[in-house]
Image (tube, chains in turn blue, orange):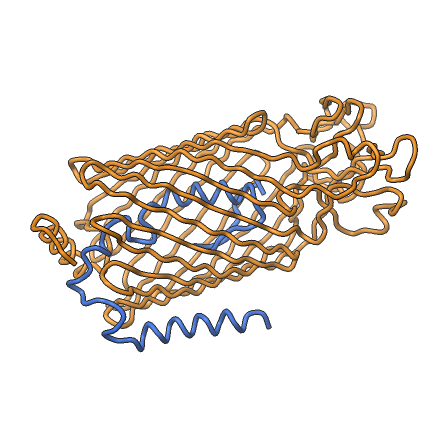
Length: 75
Length: 431
């Protein structure tokens, strides 16, 4: 039953985002700052992939921002 | 927010782009763009790694993209085998069973035969399915001399609320084959020297290859909060099944009775992990523009699994931006995990007269122990006149863990969980 709080949290965030309307979010012409490379989640994908690979090989955790995956004999 | 003229024009132009493309980078049909990254990684007296990565992105038209990525890992050096130090020098057989190496008295046993080159290829495809739905498909293959892997993934994302909210669902399926040097060891069996005779190979091997399958599901929500901030929350569920042990790791059986020889290793066994693992995680991320052009980026992940590993990862970056003069980005990462339930630094012989019979799983791999990792780093990046970027990142990673309390006899004199430090340099260039 450990998944219940997680699902509840996801639903809450999603519902808040959909229902908030003009209070949260921007108009299409207000996205200038958000279009910058450093404001995108995947702005530096190769650096992120290398970091994930390092920590995958050194720790017992992986994934989060993307799939946890495998694909390497290092762990 | 006060804006000067130059910045205002820049933001309006970027906004027009963002409005048209929903935040994607600008690309004309048929255009290629390239990204590259090089990692140099070094642990003093242990592993060194050289990893170049190059990717190409092709805009086919109508927001349809193809991505290709090639990774090469070249790794050399020594890795902790899991065995405990001893008051006398210890001699171990290499995984192939054909040679031996000796570890000095009191030294942490490191297997020096760590040498590998891995090649990985990723292909990705993404395109909008409708004005609000977007699909991404991916395929990965990788090969190294003792490990092969293949995986496919699919993600569907839908925008809501003027594209301020994006909900995505993803699934990934992987299949790996491990072909350990010397064969697949029998878990918790003794790592004996090879029987006499040249071609017999090492003892206690049960086959040439094993496999594992991995699947992952993810659901995530991204929310634009205002013109300068956004957040993301993801939930991930993953299950691996098959051969999950590390064929090169050992667990020492240690004499734990008081008296002469207490704390000394009596035998070295191959480790054995359960044949399935179910992991879940929750990931939260937040980005915010600050001041003129600075950005703060913070994320937190909580992970838990049915091996009883629990981990917290906190990551904080601050981008100090000087526009055309580049940016400096300090980085701090804190990681803490609790041990897997079958983790043990050694097997005490007084409690387990027959370790094989009384215990089904054991691993002394420090990566499954109680431990903490701290990363400190700094990155400098600079835009090029043609709108690309080069950057350089220096990082230092410090990993330390909990050694067992009150180990028997001679083991009390040794560091049973030595700290591991790593220095990393990354260079990135887009073109």
